[in-house]
Length: 235
Image (cartoon, rainbow, N blue to C red; front, top):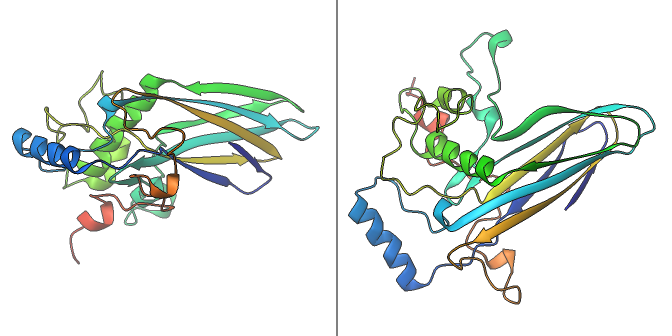
């Protein structure tokens, strides 16, 4: 999908076109939640169901060098991670820091007319799904606003910091909402493609594919189940 921009950030949302569950399938995931004793619902679109890879290219459309930044946030069927919501309003204005994005964020230096390509690998997208779970569904309720700072600066395979409240038998939702943001000092264009391996036939057949009738909501932003504002103590 192409995106072009000049001085202002450009945004695009890709939503995985997951089909709606049948009645017996919905009953099965509700029964699984009960069996596992989970506080949060078992997802219909789970990490165990999909492997996802994103391929991207950024092209400098100017005849002078430029610098671009590509980030991917978004969420899952239950809600989104919006970094701006995790800025501490009580901190000194000079110390109010936006937490990292789920994917991307490194500068992309572009010569005049140059195209750079990259990939967010399956393991990186899977890690983003695990990070989402620790941030928006199972954070430390006493320090929700600090969750992304703890989680997104570490890999879940190397450290449990930030993941302490995710149940060990949790069924992790797949990242199914991808919010792309492209920022540049010049005129650049982004193309991306999302490649999906569907292990349990949860994507519709091409003939039946219709994002407007899919399971994952198409709203610009989905409120997170646990957000800093909701968890903040009343004054």
